[in-house]
Image 1 (cartoon, rainbow, N blue to C red):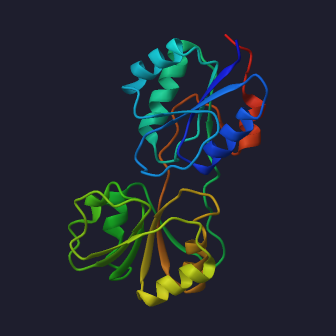
Image 2: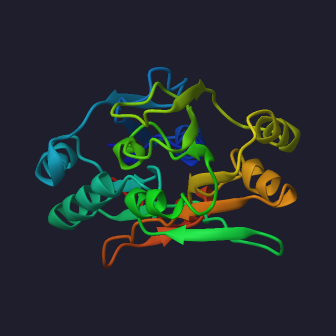
Length: 248
């Protein structure tokens, strides 16, 4: 039997990894997507969409489909599936690795304000400015719903889930975004402060450079910690090097 790799996807790195694995003779790859994005794009190999039913459901799926290795290449803030994947891999003795792109780091001239959660990020805003560029995604926006004195420009790949801030303008757009695009957006909407998650990666990093160039403060929500004991790598090449592809 061919070795079978399950990629928990939803990121650029997951797509790249699936393509690398699918190109290897004798390797079967299945990418699992949560189904939150309406147009995920083409993926190499097999694709499944939807949840597993927690760690127990994922463990059952690993056994039933004779999975030989798991790569968790989900978004750095998808802490629920990451915890479930770690538990399922341990329960089934399936080798697992977490593929996480490196987080962003402040440089000279940056005015970053770290926050441990969206609620903490919301609490930091009032002293920093009244016009907020919110780029934390379409979920968890209830944290900003009780700030009527602030105006929000909310950018998201998909329509956001309510409750939303009472004074909000929604912009549906998908990166990558250029530095000039981001500077023009910040100027056009007279933004005072940017709020983002530490997602890492180049495709959405231009907003940070734009904020620095314009002297704007940035509230950065820190990543949740990884489960104890998991192995994490920063790129596709490192994940491939760690995979054990001997079929079960």
